[in-house]
Length: 337
Image 1 (tube, rainbow, N blue to C red):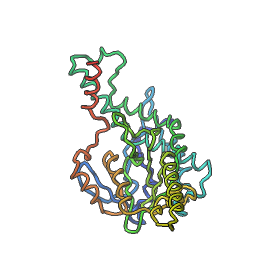
Image 2: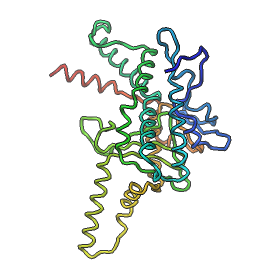
Image 3: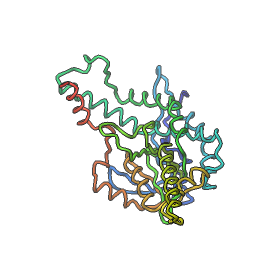
Image 4: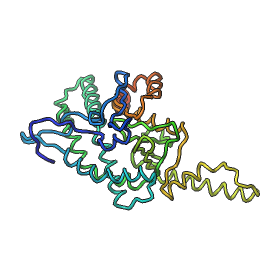
């Protein structure tokens, strides 16, 4: 970490180089949708995805910032992502490139507001539960109520330890996805989105190591990097081989039924971008809307998807990272046992 001056600095939790790939014009302007106030506006990339002194904290009376370290990583990452966008392919990736992008993804997941929101909500929920049960915070062993500054310091510290998570990105199967004509990708203030179609009743299914997990990071208005659990690709490969055996056994010509699966496997083995259908882009954009703390960024002013999602689920305006009622229920269930 670096000691800073007393002057606050606008610090980006979504890097400027990344947002420029979603710019609406050559003037580096971008459209923004504010979920909280349900309105859109245009601003410069410089002013988007940033807050004053976001990465600054105090240690022994001195201001410390991790912003220079993040800027150093961005200097390494930016040309790699630029090359992927220009070539529309991951084919030129080497181990070093993949390692750098993996670290970037791990840090990007932790450098945003969402972890601070999660910690704050959990902190407040536990405090509320203890007080409602007649207890006192100061008397609970192992629990310390953290103020805003302490939460900030803790989350900044977790960013510095993000390298421990990088292998979970590296070990996934990587695919490059391309939006079809007239469709574009959103990116949000929490751009690493997670999705899992494999249900785990009674347990969460969005962990980086959980079977079936998909991790998505939009790279530009036209391209998205997807890192998926190897089990998903193995399942597709198994189904393709099984269907091919069946077709040969029945003497059938290529029916085209497996074209989609073949395209996925081709994207895996060649690194070339796989073109999606509009509904696939909408799905990935919906993940950005759902994971966003507040802001969604786009190269166009079309935020109809956001409007529709908020209309159906108003809680998306202020997403909760923890469900207080679920925590209370688990605590109550534990007391009954």
